[in-house]
Amino acid sequence: MINYTERIALLMQDVVARTGRLSFINLEEVIVFARFGRSDAEGAFATCHCLTMPESEPGYFFWKDRETGELTRRSPWFVTKSPQVRVGQTTVKYLISFVLPRFCDQTLVGSRKADLYPSAEPWVAKLDTIVHELYHIDPGATGIRALENADGRRSYRSHGPMFYEDVSDMVRGYLATQPDPALYDFLRHDFACLSEMFDGVVGTTFSNFPSFPQRYMETVDLPASEPRVKLEPLKTPTQPVIYTEDDLHIRQFTECNSRRLTRKGRYCAA
Image 1 (spheres, rainbow, N blue to C red):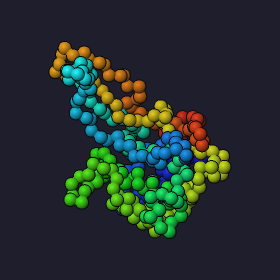
Image 2: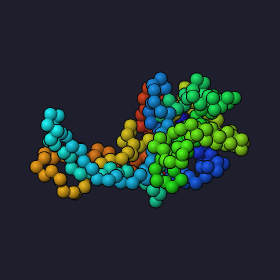
Image 3: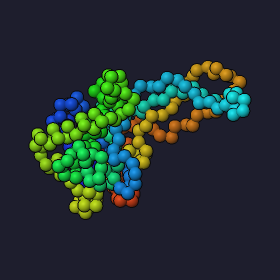
Image 4: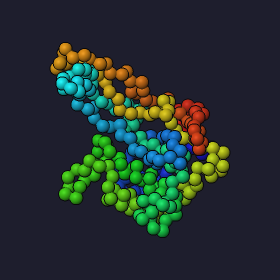
């Protein structure tokens, strides 16, 4: 079976090596993993997840009486934190997820990307998405790459017209370096074709699939400003706050669902 996330990770290594704007990325600090999503459903094709965002300032939830406006309940103080993900001795800073089979069936035909690639083959839409997610990685590893408005001020959006144009410039630049077609040929095929050619499609996932490492709330010991107000406890986190290579598994994906095959382990696949 074809390990789709492994193929993407290998392609990313070549893209980063041949693309100056992305050359700062250390892919040892990035995990490529798969999520499930049907091709006939709406949603993202891929997402970049940052694990380097700092701990939030302390805060709490509160409830007020609708009529009087008086505080009736509150939660304990808490901060929001990112989980730790380690592979061996390496601390992972970013995760990039690809939605299968939806990503495999992506095409330029009828998409907003078509105008950026007027003479390209339909599969280039997938290469665009891969570069797009890599471009979200911030050079300072402080979060998702910040954009600037026309006046030079920081924008709070993660996308904009220049972002898409920058990505398409990098895609065309990469292909102009004449990379080995064997690295990207798998992008030419949709999910059904890959499943038939390789007798199945698999990818890396996390042990708590369909979930994955995400920010969580942790209580902090601070005095309540309204000690007489009823305190509602926070829900106990149900997901891990520390992940290792033992939490990486292999799952097979189909058009309708997925199933776990085996634990991935440190050196089985990317």
